[in-house]
Image (tube, rainbow, N blue to C red; front, side, top):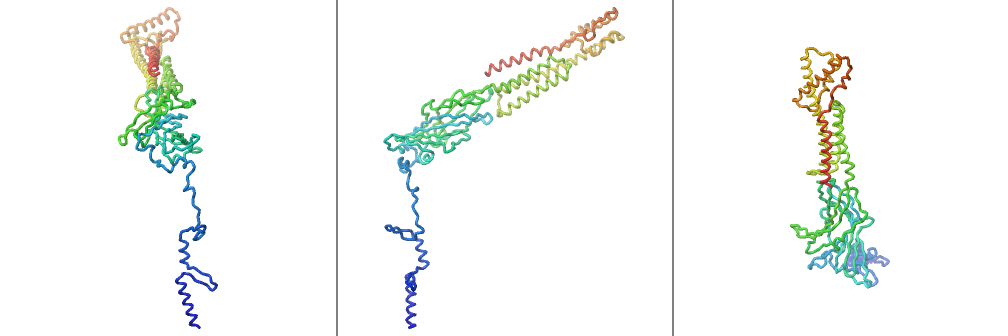
Length: 475
């Protein structure tokens, strides 16, 4: 009996090792661990309406990855390779362009650039996008479809910064017609370079250009043209600038050559700007003119009033220096002379010459006083003793102020001596006869220096002549 039981146990062990399953006493079949793991790794197979394998790993297929939208199906997006241009291998694709300028924001003389916001529209025909329509209606899309089809690769030549507006969504529009014609529009703000000639500043007129060109396609593959000629460019009537008057907008087309790649069509948006002069008249020209006129006041001040004439001249010189510095601080450091520089520096020279004029007057007057003092000493020595009348009414200060300081030459020295002797004789006769003559100051022959007299006429006349020539040349 024990032997039979032992044989049955051995037989059961052999069966389990062969089939990988075990049977318990209740008749339940158990699978081994390796068998369970192998079954989990098997792919799911579907037989009829039944699924074989573990139900935990069952997943539904992603329909968005396998199906296309209705518009893409209608345009047959998946049936064509839109990495190639339309009609590849044939003639160049004509792409018409028109532009609407929304605003001309800023123009900077320091950075030599301008900023413009515009709507740029492209027109071409792509037969791959043709679709059947019984109503002949076009379809309009946003920027999501633009990434799936071919569009012209335009860029702005000489641009420093540009971007497409994306508030509240990308400002891009695509319109497709049943025959395959395409309208592609986008709203762009671009900052582009503008080479300005400031030799006539601020009486200048500037012409700037915004240049549009294909980056990759030469004129053999892509032909750019203005769709309606000069009428392809439209502007908002409300466009205005603080410093400029917009005189003209016009378009041109040229070919650009690059030695490495070839010839390209280039479109130009040209606009002419004339600067407003009134601001600079108030801030620059008028103050400079007042400073020059203020320097002329010293010609009517007594040459002996040194504390009055010297500070007046220095003040006008420093004020002109401040005006010149302020104007140049807001301008680029160009190597040529501007029109405003000519006016300011000529005005500065006039102010400076008024200071030099007083220095010359003071110096010549000092020399003349020394000569007359020597003459007075000679007269005193020739008389032997000092005349009592001369001591009573003829002080040293009066002698210094006597005589014609109007630039008389040395040849007229005898005339001066005669005048002084005549004056002394008059004083002596008055004392002898008992007549009371006028006071010493009133009897003196006082005259303004000849340089001051001539300056009163020469300086204003020269400055007026300069203004006539200046404004006739630049206006």
